Length: 251
Ligand SMILES: Nc1ncnc2c1ncn2[C@@H]1O[C@H](COP(=O)(O)OP(=O)(O)OP(=O)(O)O)[C@@H](O)[C@H]1O
Ligand SMILES: [Mg+2]
Image (cartoon, rainbow, N blue to C red):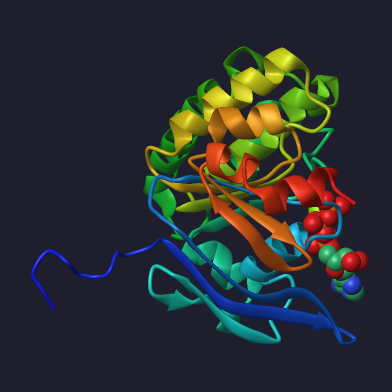
């Protein structure tokens, strides 16, 4: 092999991934590769298998066969909590913030508790947590709302708070299932800005139906249909692909 022509290192390499539910292959021999600092969007009709792909990556659903390599680690062998520890954060379709806690408290309880800190060092930890909470709150446009109870937030602000609860754990891969569903136009624009900011330190894998939003954020789009890839590339490429046009508009 020529020097300088090493195979590319991907953050996430999904290959030959299959899951079958009572013989029905919801994801069927799927392969795709996500780079560092990439925003990848998965689109596709209802039932295409998009959510199932995220379920497989985060360990909620077990693969029937295939491999999910993340930073050289095989995720299909790990449990859900081990996958979180490996650096994968996942947000579900409906927001699940703690309504009776403040923004600050919601972020604080999400701060990772990996290391034990004893006695006199506890105050240093408190300080570090407070700083990190404020940093994340600023990123998710809620710095002025730290003492607001989550049930007082708009739907869009709750979605941001939940993204913040994942960001505070500093994942290398953040997976979001329809993050702008139910958001206003201005909230969507701010979410696009947020994602573009956070990929400086990580990659993002997003499922989304809103094509304007996809166009705004996607570096690359993977079109899923019946558990398989129908098309992949830039938004420009996939939206002009006759196979994609047929599935979305055709008969
Ligand atoms: N645990 C399960 N058991 C049986 N079938 C399942 C299970 N999870 C998903 N499926 C089926 O797999 C298919 C893919 O579902 P999935 O939720 O991944 O689709 P999706 O692309 O996310 O759709 P949507 O756009 O509606 O959210 C569907 O036919 C669904 O009914
Ligand atoms: Mg889904």
